[in-house]
Length: 138
Image (tube, rainbow, N blue to C red; front, side):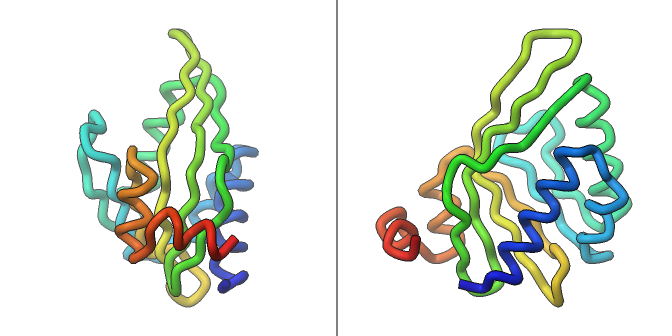
């Protein structure tokens, strides 16, 4: 397992959860690509650091508070890391708990692609693994 890639993803999640968007930005490759999940209100993709940070800024403005919590092991597949998360949000409307899997591609210690999937098995398939393969590696 490439611990370096996993640590980059952990650092991004930790920075997000404390609201340190400058630290999040610093972990993104200048040419980062963000692909929201199928059916997301703003379909994307978003290309480049500025576009990604603008999209995330708009998302964060929707809620008073939010946090992304891993609910599975971090699965390393070469330059990609997959992790199932629950995104807990609270705002002026009802609280929500959005479950999805995020696949992070890293390059030179920075995040170059972020892809969201509703279906965990589909996300693992995107990185060339099955759920059985992912559990065997944990």
